[in-house]
Length: 363
View 1 (cartoon, rainbow, N blue to C red):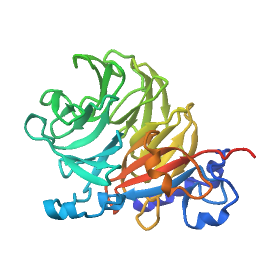
View 2: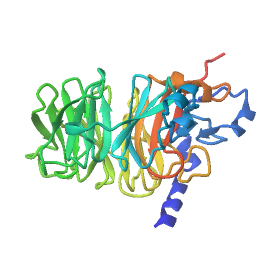
View 3: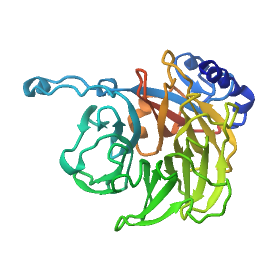
């Protein structure tokens, strides 16, 4: 099977990559490519640059200070088995499923801290999270079988879900709704944000008997700016796309190892142009589709020996707000539009950071 997966990577050929027509770096510094990792690789024009990866705050530049020595403060340990992540207010939040906590990386202080609340808000198996604009944290916890909600300071607010009612795999929020991927009931549960009452499920229980829009194992969710909900269905080997009221729109991918296919789709994200980014934990790459569902390219490869590789990737986020923290990693002559962060559950590089490159200015 491993051999088949590796063979499956061959489908990511140059002909697929040629679908990208825009160049991301100025062509005046070709020698720099020997020191940086781009996707697609030369001779195709680069669109994505691998910037850096980290598993602990030491890899983000933390150094022990005299104050640490006086107070006896010890460095936070490395991530063990991360899954979901979110970015907010200069911090990266990463769910560590083995540690039963969320590790918070402060990009300003180059330090990490554990978020492991006690009592009612105690985490058991946090797998995914999202953070609202006001800092409210929504954590899908498969150990509690609940979505646990905290305020911006980490204080426990409430929890959605009763015992054996659902198995939440991911959570996403809109202005007035909370969307929860429920692996137990094979649906996305939609709640009112105001009172956390269940409004409806996707697909609806009384929907017409058709395979279109059916969910088997809704693992990860993403909302875009155009009112679309994307659901990676690891059991159906596809990504299903709905509007925010649950109307089925289209399906991305199919089962397989060919271009545009999935063997184990996990994390999903959407950029401001409507492009969808889908993690495949089996082939260990991220595929990118345009807003109409057409495959554009891929990035990442399985392994740990080369910069930019992924090892059992899980979650992905597109971020426009924290680019300044990673500008120093860009190759000379390159500019970046936004960040793409991907977690790996194994290997030395648990969080990999990539930059989506801008088209160079016309002279």
